Amino acid sequence: MKRANFPYFSVGILIFIFLLSFFGDIFYTKSPYELNQDLILLPPSLSHPFGTDRLGRDLLARVIEGGKVSLTIGVGSALIASFIGLIAGVSAGYFRGKVDKTFVIVVDLFLTFPTFFLLLALVSYIQASSLVLILVISITGWMTTARMIRSESFSITKKPFIKILQIAKTPSYKIILKYFTPLIAPIFFVSFTFGVGGAILSESGLSFLGLGILPPQMSWGSILSEGKEVIDIAWWVSFFPGLMIFLVTFSLINISDFLQSITNQKESLINS
Image (cartoon, rainbow, N blue to C red):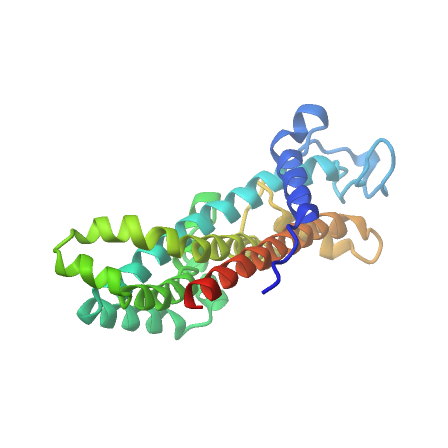
């Protein structure tokens, strides 16, 4: 099986966007909050590379500030969701029995409702903030990871060396940490990269609908939402935050595809 080429371009884009979001304001010192009635809806220029919005605020400064929130929510919620999925999936696949039956019931219960509508229902009753969105998105996004890890854990549990360890009464936590973790790690990282992109899109969708980050905080989604009212006369207000969301999601998908190809190659070698 041919391994996919390492996605240098996608990794470079992600590194650049992370550095821009978390360290860009050190070099680009314009305020993302300062209003100026003389600078309303100016197109991109040397003095304002991304233009200005309808309140005269510098859009590049707002994209930098919004990136901190969007990336924090994306990485934080994906990390929590992946760990929940890891613990639930391994437990169901290893212990089986009542643990697995409970797992199936809980996952089916969550999957009864479309994820985004479940998100809408939760944030409708809770005042949105970065921490709240991280918790809500992670709670509604762990099921896919858990199901994949459960399936892989089933196949690992059937391997002869695992059965020998169980007969030898090796503690379960030692078996899971020493033997399950290395085999499940690729699936975990694939799920995590997909989860970051999905969480950023979820936050953006909520903010676009006015249920996400509230002023004076900002995210790429909320900036994009503000731009929809003037998109016919000021395309740049929606374009640049939308471009950031697209670049991050596209790059993460490429990295996920690369990790998936490595996982598939390892599985084919193990099975052959």
